[in-house]
Image 1 (cartoon, helix red, strand yellow):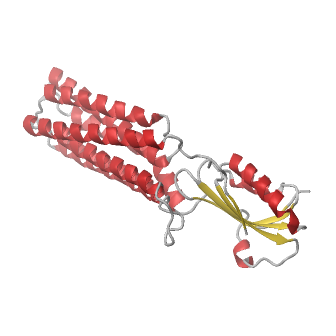
Image 2 (spheres, rainbow, N blue to C red):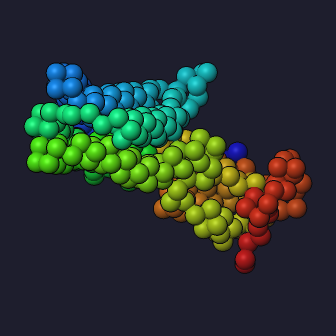
Image 3 (cartoon, rainbow, N blue to C red):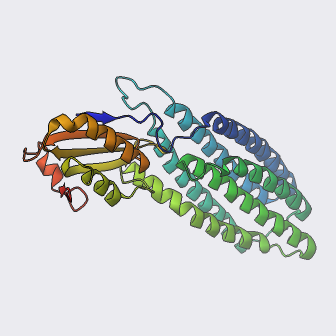
Length: 315
């Protein structure tokens, strides 16, 4: 069995130290703001600020989880965890998506409660505190903007902060309207609108996290293209039992059975396939080479639907 080990895995984040710093700064800023917002909400009798403080507290927890996942991903493999703890990044991305949706549920419940039982709120306090929240969340989101499409945990952190910025904008607008008109119904209405925006932006994160958790083909990887690339490689006669999945939120893996006429070609084929798969986003490839016509030892596993069925070289 041959293994491909590219020197620089496709999709790795080259500046993990700066990302760790972003998480630390983001956690510190948001934790401090949660304390300020909670006290302001308590003394101004603003349920809007108190509920937003609870939402921001869930985001601090999410940032802590994401940072923990990055630290675990850098841990060395052991005899019991031979891949290390890289897969924890996938589990955390799924948990972050769930936390976001739970936070949305809390916003919806609180907004509906305020629609049914509107209460006077100190609009000026709401306006200023929410304004600070916009700045804090916007600055934190900017720290994750560059890498949000390269890793699900970074994307989750970005979405959390962007969603918080939207929530704070909504709360700030409602504070201004309440100051000018005394119409307290604006607060829960804005909350419901923001909740809908958060659900829309979070759905993709939840879908991708679930797919990776179930060992599905990662987003951005075209299974058919990978299969064709291997099957069309000179020297390859047939490909079957090909699977692609994610080792972590930044690394993808593949296994395949490859039939060749001459097993002496294995070193050259391994090198060529490794280079081609690296271009397609496959970081860790494991090949089982077989002579053409040799019975497959895992024949039952190969008789899957079109994706894993045997594909002969077009040559």
